[in-house]
Image (cartoon, rainbow, N blue to C red; front, side):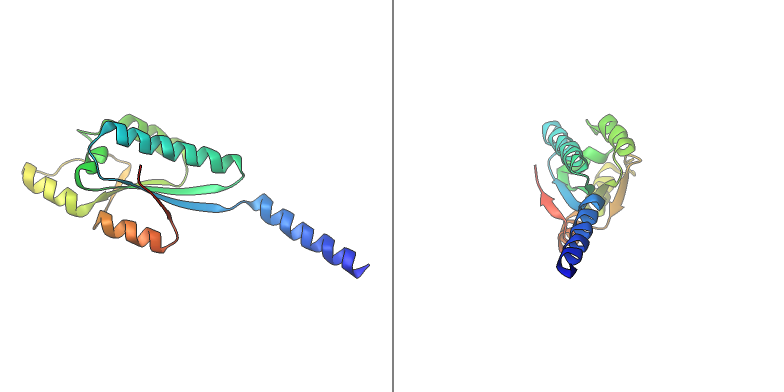
Length: 143
């Protein structure tokens, strides 16, 4: 009788754990000023989110842009600004990080401060941010 009770208790713990779902952490890397790459990245973000939600899991996703890829997050240049705006409203736990090194260099070259999309935050270094997130267990994806 104790074995049956212990088995039922273990089964209830396992079922409860499955019902709660798992949180997956993913970082996407964009370093190309290419609308096709940017759209593929956003497609991947949507696909990952949709898949994990269908499994009862959560996804925490960050898109890090640096170098020529920072155009993805520039208000006057981004070919995917509308998609980013909509996706940010639709997908919880989605964030966009702009490389501060690239941003500062672009500002200096332009002679003025460039506007980032409202959805974008600035990190000191895009490469360092990628390293930090991977050290925190994020899966790394470069489309």
